[in-house]
Image 1: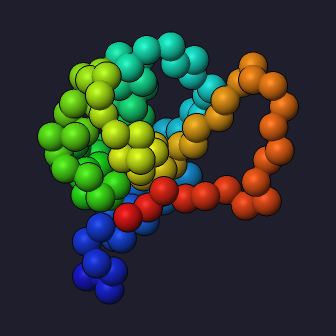
Image 2: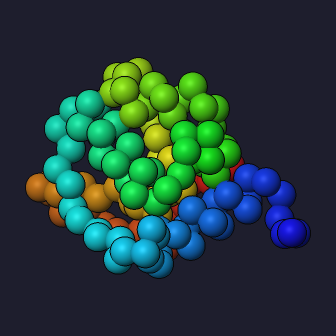
Length: 114
């Protein structure tokens, strides 16, 4: 089957799907303005569904619990940032801040895995 532990397998699968053609369609990448926890949850739910992942698949890939994914997609305002970043990473996304004063950029981006 595969030689990776379950979490690594699902993360690799999610990243592969995010970078290729899920559901036979070109994955459209867009900058989505997020101005609330509900908007973040809706954007992540849409990305998960476009990748054809269940909430359980995403939870396993990101190393978080299914309840966390449910709460995040529902817009719960008290979710842990580190886990949010894991979910975004598992979906093949990244966080970018726009409109802030210039800040030095890191030499290499940090990945938020388990």
